[in-house]
Length: 443
Image (cartoon, rainbow, N blue to C red; front, top):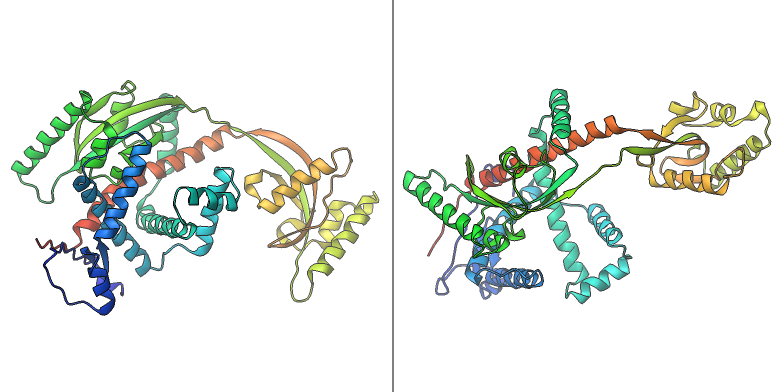
């Protein structure tokens, strides 16, 4: 599949009746026994796949005590989700943006760490839920691949100016950004080239749905799964916790005056009709104090000429010389004489004040180990240790907390602006690649 053949992406989705005969290869014939319900370029969605996803979703909803919509309604949403996934996965493959094994391994390790589990315990926990580890990795790879193509397609078009950051920072202060809002969202999209009659029909549906939600005749999450055209539909429309500045402006205007449990909508914009619910509000007070370490280093690079053993032995010798306390051979002098890091050697190895986030994990752990091990020593100099750059010894000269409030606030503002613009663009981008696709339905 070359780039030209999918510009725009051509997708033919065919719903096949049981009696419909199709000319397929031997491999495809085995798939046809499972009933193909959609064809997307050179890929298919089968009835078995949809039924499996329906059962998984129903199990998850039951665990959350959420009433599931009918199977037909779930199948409709899941089919759309699978179609969207196929489009994005095909785009990612075409542009060479599939998730790598390294990305997947890092994601698996992060999930294990966040759940305070070893990799072995994570595998065991998955098996208890009836999920094979290989299946878990495959699904994670798909999610990461979709994330790659979304970010590559949307982020380059997001521009953030210095003025926007400054204005956003002011808004954060004015809007009491220490609060986080847990918001639910339902989107009823306008049909493409919709007539006045179709728009009026959609408005009537949105008003009825909003009234049902306000009367609590249906739960918000069930309604979202059943009706929403947003990418969060199968998550029950759950947007998670966001500050006012992270929410789309259309929502933030209403959310800031809403009470817990309140429903607002329908709210109209160019994408369709929106219904939102405020589930919860919580305080979110950021910490702006950052611990930094004053550090200097001596680096010896290991290569074809200098082996690991030779580099370590050289640093052992340099360290012993420094610890003798001769002023002519102090750390600064020895760094200028021997360090192979051109940026710091001329400064006596001085790295300045650095935080853990600014250095590698190996470097950060050795800073802390050196402080702990030699806390009662005048010279806190590490044993030699290795990083991808080579072999190091470091001297920790001090520890200090810095007030990074302004810098962190600006960094947060930039990140929040990026995420806000990304979220606003995502549904629009998904809608565009759907509309650019050729869809044929055969009944």
